[in-house]
Amino acid sequence: MPVPDVKERYSGSVNQVTIGATAEQGGSRTSTVTIGGETGLPMLSFEADYPHPPAFALEVNTAGADDWHGEVRKHVSDVADDVEKWAAQCEEWGADLVMLDLTAAHPDRGSRSPQECADDVKRVLGATGLPLIVWGTDVNDVDNNVLPKCTQAAAGENCLFGTAKDDNYRTLAASCLADSHKIIAEAPSDINLSKQLHILLRDVGVGLKDIVMHPTCGALGFGMVYIYTTIERGRVAALSGDALMQTPVVVNLGKEIGRVKEAVSPADENPQWGDLAARALLWEAATAICYVQAGTELLIMRNPEALQQAKAAIERIWPQPGADS
Figure 1 (cartoon, rainbow, N blue to C red):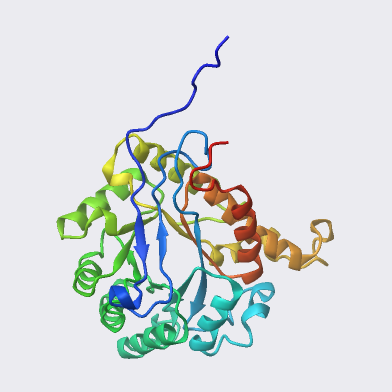
Figure 2 (figure 1 turned 60 degrees about the vertical axis):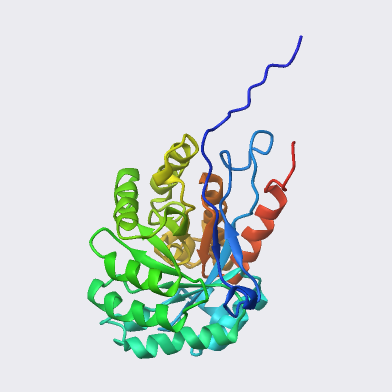
């Protein structure tokens, strides 16, 4: 009896988005990262193509790491007061990209000026050849002053800037268009809100293939299931031909781990949970792996050991181009 063909066949695929520009492309990066391109649900190599594996970024924060959990802060304590050294170390730790978080521009964290933030961007670009992600403060008035200066400082480098939201997208969109960058579109865990934001960005001139979607993020045990299902349902819509949902997905998960008591509670308070260092590491790595299974292409982390663990695990299971197993 012949074996029936049970492969799912989809009419759509995920857009491919490249971050970074080499000298030949008008930038100064020594490498670029391309995400997306899948033609099926995650890791089903017998029925789909997966031209690019998920990419991993490490966070560099302009406000340092004093408020990070100790089991993560210990890894960066020697470089946390210098974004150049920190960014260079990310490359040594095996990150594919660097994410520069502009927290120090927040009114409650120092109110660093737009020019100082732009200088930080230049310093990071000079310290590493990795592609760069730049993340704002989530304060609209601040981001509208700071991010345009930063896009100018990185003009030609094809960075990924965020985040654009439905109540604050025009200024960042115009800056990314003027300086040739990609843009992160943030909508809170809702497919329809994501589609609406993508339409707004498209209407002001941003191409759908220049957008990476951020559906917000929750850690394992702290809201991850809801985000997971949102990503999963969005991916099914994309593969079914919905062009507005065919953008790759980024999650900024590193900072979420510190909100989960199981990942930060000392062993003497909860000895049944085991060693804190192991818990903190595994919680972040496991969260990353879960998001890849949902359909995430770009993951931003804090703990370099967790990044290495997650990256190694994904390399073992991610379908290789041309695989049919």
